[in-house]
Image 1 (cartoon, rainbow, N blue to C red):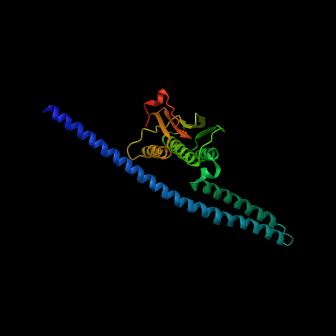
Image 2: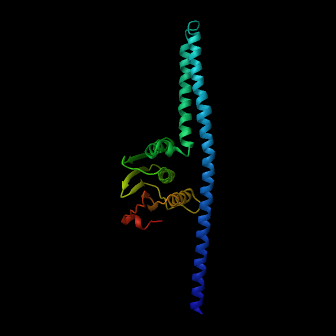
Image 3: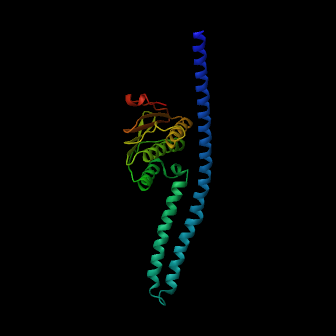
Length: 252
């Protein structure tokens, strides 16, 4: 009887785990779908900022130049006022360009992985006040889809570190290895694997797994509370398998 009960308990536990895994997989798929639809909307907003707002502001600046040339003899001080307004317009145009860059989900395809990572570092410094260093090996060659997945993984890992630790240092490294590429994100304070179910950290972890699986990348994570995390994603023309002793226990 005891044996039967133990077997039944083991079966129930296994079935429960399978259901939980299925629900987690389905919720991740739904979350990724929502983000894809969000990206579509952001792409529309990005196009609006570039085609309408940005070009309109630039046209206003040109019209101010015409106005200055037409009236500077009658109103000598108009040049100073026009210059002040154009300075404000230039600042507004630059901010529109930054928003266009941040909102456009196709940024990696437009400017490349290295530039996209550098801009991500600038955004994290501006928004969170953290130190982010990007080391990119110029020999790296990957397809646009893999580059986008690597960028998304780096973004989620760095954002988790920024939100969890008061002043973390983040290092992003991209280098070639064998027939592919390795992305590594190290931080000094975050705990990528330490989020409670439903927390921002836990959702970021699930998204990193999703981006890796969708692009055929291997994802390896080692994380220790209070000490920081190491996130590695490898792949490219072939799957790159890189596991350190410290990271093996955190493999997904």
